[in-house]
Image (cartoon, rainbow, N blue to C red; front, side, top):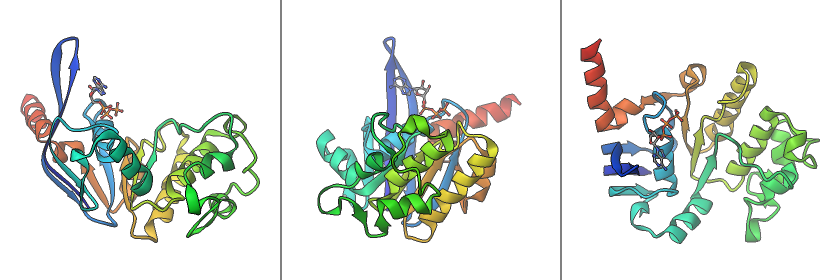
Length: 231
Ligand SMILES: Nc1ncnc2c1ncn2[C@@H]1O[C@H](COP(=O)(O)OP(=O)(O)OP(=O)(O)O)[C@@H](O)[C@H]1O
């Protein structure tokens, strides 16, 4: 469902070009559940930004669900993302002035407003243990509860692909455990593809597959060989 071919991404910083990702070939199948691990600064978030179309690669082809995402313009990538991808960001990005329910409803548009195939917003809130919290604003919720709202917002329109960037990064271990289980449970019973960037090894171990960014990124593979030699 997702293919990378000769994808390169670099950034310009203070007049210098810094290569970040160089991915010759990477394939993800529909329904795969993959934890992506790797050192800080190795390009994990950049990888998710490329997959979601938030960023474009400098060269190469990214194909998602049979569509060439890397060749779309920004509005087309944005509308592709809202229709097909659920993105759980590290800092939740809930709108502070809206209630939990209103934050979730934003992800449902047109005919789907108020209800998805897998139930109403209230049913989703109940499913994630927030039955009585729909009218609460983000500041009135704990971080774990805010993360549950962010998860429902990302999943309620039933995207084929779910991306999560450090979904347990700022949570205590017990809450992190619950959130990890919840994500796998909600995506597991459906043919949804789930890619999670995480530093949390407990979380990664729970996934059927773990891929280190070094395995995906040719440049990082070279770097790893050098590190190994240095050791
Ligand atoms: N917009 C940008 N402009 C310039 N450099 C950037 C930009 N975004 C990311 N970088 C750089 O690209 C590299 C990879 O960043 P990225 O956030 O993808 O790493 P990461 O593996 O997700 O790190 P972490 O685990 O710390 O979140 C870093 O060196 C970062 O400074």
